[in-house]
Length: 331
Ligand SMILES: NC(=O)c1ccc[n+]([C@@H]2O[C@H](COP(=O)([O-])OP(=O)(O)OC[C@H]3O[C@@H](n4cnc5c(N)ncnc54)[C@H](O)[C@@H]3O)[C@@H](O)[C@H]2O)c1
Image (cartoon, rainbow, N blue to C red):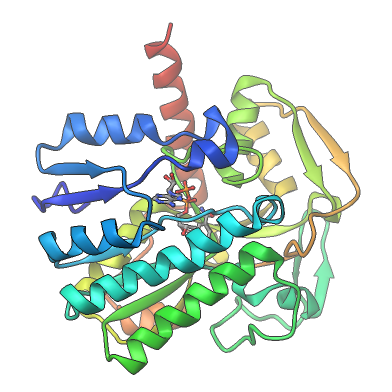
C-alpha cells in the first residue's frame, strides 16, 4: 500500500520464518516480488534482536512511520523454542521501541499484537453449540478490549506477545509516543506463507486445492475465527498514521461478518468444488480459542473512514487465484 502510494519503504526481515517452520515457511519469494515491483522498496535482512543494527538503521533513516509485524507468530511453536520466541517477540519489540523513541519519537508506530494476549479467557464466556459452529450465548457481537489479559493460560507465544503489547502501551503512555497496539484475530491473504502451525485460512485453502490432508484438532471443527485480509489491515494502519493515538489498544479482525468455523470453511470450499480430505484429532491445541470474534466498535469509532473491503469469499478467491498462478508459473 505504501509502495503503491510512492513511499520509500524499507522492509526489515531476516526470513527467520524459514527457520521456525522449514522451507515451506520462507518469505523470500514475497521479498523478491516487492523488489521486482517497486523501485522505492529496499530490503534489509537485519535480525530485530540485533540492538545495534536496529539503532544504526533508525539513526540513519529516521523513519516517518513504523509498522512492526516481525515475530515468532505461532502459539504452538513457542514451547519448543522459548528463548527465541521471547527474544524476538518481546526483546525485538523493545529494540524497535527504544530506537523509535531515540531517533523518530513523533513517528506513528503500529504494533501487530494478538488476541492470544487474552489467553484462554475467551473460552470462559458462555457459549452455545450450533450445528456447524460455536457462538456466544449472551448474543454479543464479539470480544472487546475490556477483556482481562491476566490470570489465564496464554501459551509462551501469548505471554511473549503480551509482554510486547504492554511495553508498546507503556511507550505510548510514559513517553507520549504515537504507538498503536492492534490485537489481531486471523490476519490473512494470498501472500501468507501458510504452514500447519500458522496461517489457518491460507493453509486450509491450499490443502483443499492441492489434495493435501487437513487435520482438525478438537472442538468438533466448530471453533470460530474472524478473518481479515492484509489489505484491510494495511488500510487501517494508514488511517492510524493520519490520526495516531498514544498507547491505544484495538482488537483487529474481520468481525462477525467475516467469522467462520472450520466446518463452515469446509462447506464454503465444497461449494467452490474442492472436497477437503480431513482427519480429526479430538484433543484441541493447548489454550486454543473455541470462539473468537473481534468486536470492531473501538476501531470504527476512532477511525470512521475505515471499512472492511474483503469478505471471506473474496479472500478465498484471491488465495486460490494466487495458488493457480504459481502452479502455472512453476510448470
Ligand atoms: N496472521 C495472523 O493470523 C496473526 C494473528 C494475530 C497476530 N499476528 C501478528 O501479526 C504479525 C505478522 O503475522 P504474520 O502471520 O504475517 O507472520 P509471518 O510469520 O508471516 O511474518 C512475520 C515475519 O517476521 C520475520 N521475522 C521473524 N523473526 C524475525 C527477526 N528476529 N528479525 C527480523 N524478522 C523476523 C519472519 O521472517 C516473517 O517474515 C506478527 O507479529 C503476528 O504475531 C498475526
